[in-house]
Image (cartoon, rainbow, N blue to C red; front, side, top):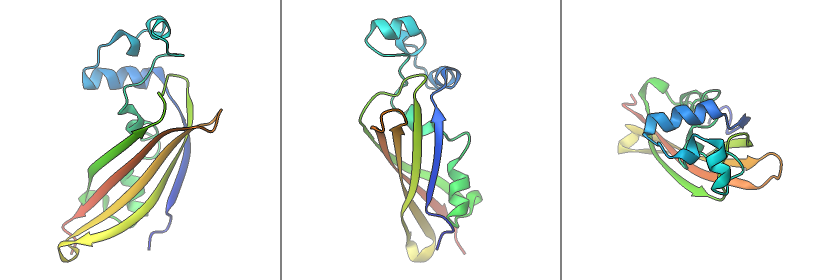
Length: 144
């Protein structure tokens, strides 16, 4: 059984991280780079591309650190899948509480593959409203 099954952290949406993310994925839209353009377009600040929600907080609590705490070998663990449910748009300056919970650990192929399904939620710390829900599937391969 894992040592911990819930992880919490607070993270702020940082403009430099959003800019770097946009560059990495080839997003060149003005609303993701220019605050004035974002506000003219109806946003409260620069909005993040939707999948940025997966990355926020990973610099302080990477998935492989969570995998290790859950008893998986990070050297043999891969990020296999993710799903999102978006409830509102993350913008630069937003502060969110991130909760990552172990939903289930299961095995396939006679134990050769071990899976950990995580549920991750992001809540606005000011309003308490749900911003994003994620399901993340990790798989450890080559178990002995």
